[in-house]
Length: 437
Ligand code: DOR
Ligand code: ZN
Image 1 (tube, protein in one colour):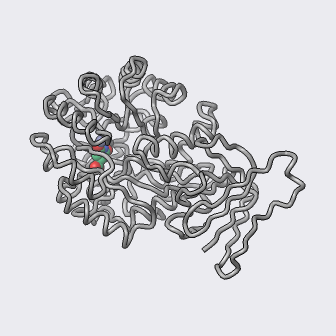
Image 2 (cartoon, rainbow, N blue to C red):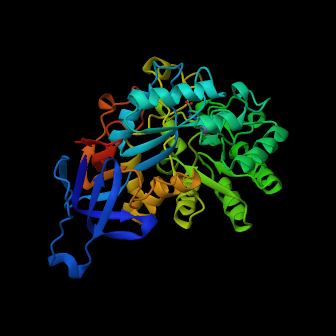
Image 3 (cartoon, rainbow, N blue to C red):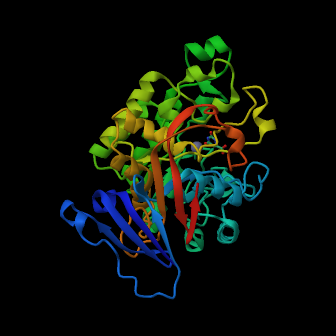
């Protein structure tokens, strides 16, 4: 099948393209990209489409942004084991609606993705039912217990693209050292959920005056920062590859910035809720704002925005963490952590563009090109000829109101329900299919 995307505003940081142009797709791959410089505007813009046998579909993208499909390095698809929260099918539907053409699914399933057969199950299920590309992240340790390393080699062969015990930290520094050594040998990143459990001590929100006032147990910023620092040191020691996920504090941003200056092989991500919401959102005990790490303060938000602006934070991921309604209806202390994030991440991140913190090009870098680079996805994250035709077309001016009930994800758990937002995908192209709204 051939698809011609015409007259869109193409932004592709990987080729430094930011201009009006056309893209020709043939059989799921980008065949040609034609940017129209000012002089070419009057010339004939048509591609030579000689093979008349195959069907050609034309998409008029005039007035819309055309970018490489978004890549989410951090989602919880919950399958196998927690299908009441999400499945590969519903999670990838939500991804497509949100403009994501690749999602990397975390290992905290049941059973945990800590061996090649679970990885194989996910890959097969995703091939059958996934609307977008699904890349599994294997656990670092068996059962995420932090005691014994998984067999990274066989899991890599089966399709794991990184390793993480996300949801739980690897508390034992020797095990983490070994994991980083292997990450070097296998050339795959270790994605670290940085939390010193002895310090977070079953806390449920940011530690401070507000947690005291609300009578909720606090998690100090240091619980994250101690582990960020430890993992940076271990990365220096081992020359491994470290990616720090869901950065939530000013101190973490500073530590990562310093480490990068020293040349440490570390990258980092944050999520929209960490630059949009503060702990104040917890005042009425809304469990939809319970996340781990917890929402922090204005000072932390400002530091995260600066980290995004100056390149300390490479990636915006969602940490899409769908939960069942009944689970989130529990008291704040008992409710599970997480936000269903795939269907709001793009408009929330576009707020950074409105605020002048990121250009659209930088945003595309953080939501597509950089994740592709970090995960060495050579055929994704850019619109180069030969690449997979993963493309998102966005109407930047479209205003809409978030309706959680209409989410395609099973997880309706969002604190952004009812929020007015601007900028939404109108077309997502993935796995040779066109999804249009
Ligand atoms: O809020 C979170 N939810 N943070 C995590 O680290 C895990 C995730 C989940 O699995 O629900
Ligand atoms: Zn995590």
